[in-house]
Image 1 (cartoon, protein in one colour):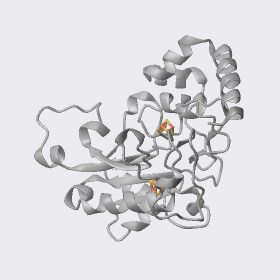
Image 2 (cartoon, helix red, strand yellow; image 1 turned 180 degrees about the vertical axis):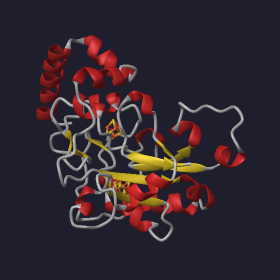
Image 3 (cartoon, protein in one colour; image 1 turned 135 degrees about the vertical axis):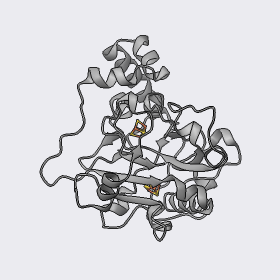
Length: 267
Ligand code: SF4
Ligand code: SF4
């Protein structure tokens, strides 16, 4: 971290704490226990859709990932390749945008001592939920992370001061921090997408750079023949994602937190 960034962090950290009420706020953010309460206190409800406005969402058909574990590998590889996600040798440095995990880790609110074998042994994808009511956005002192009108929660890497308030505020662990310079650890660089630097937070951006030019997110495109991932406009009742959501029961991660995820799971 350079001196300017460190100085800015000091000032931003102090003024943010002063403005928000000191250590109590940090504890509130760090524990994650106060996230739902923070959401309610902040007075942010679900985004009110303007006529014609889009809100993007992703549907994950879990059974398809259970049936074919290669789908997860392809989706993760595609995402990490287009976004220059580094491959650090040490687990503690790991940067993840989308990754595979067990059901019990993704849905800790649904404990089941008698889980079926398929669920117990297989994995499903998790990523940033692009919450409609995102605590990470409220926690960021520099607005480096923000929610766009289309519902995508983005990152401005240049504004990130590495304070990691957003990481503490995210109850899903969707964000990663660059403890080291990631650039030497990018195996196959994509020159159309920026690489990050040490001291910067990153996460899935719903492929905003692709969606804005009419492409599907890279993970969706990589396995599009299977329809294991369906991406679309939740505000359009005729979109494929809305039609499937209307027909089939889906679940959200930790709905009691009030974050209103835009990622839905068919289980
Ligand atoms: S999942 Fe976490 S990082 Fe993503 S929008 Fe929600 S709170 Fe923010
Ligand atoms: S939507 Fe894009 S950024 Fe997000 S996980 Fe899929 S490929 Fe990665």
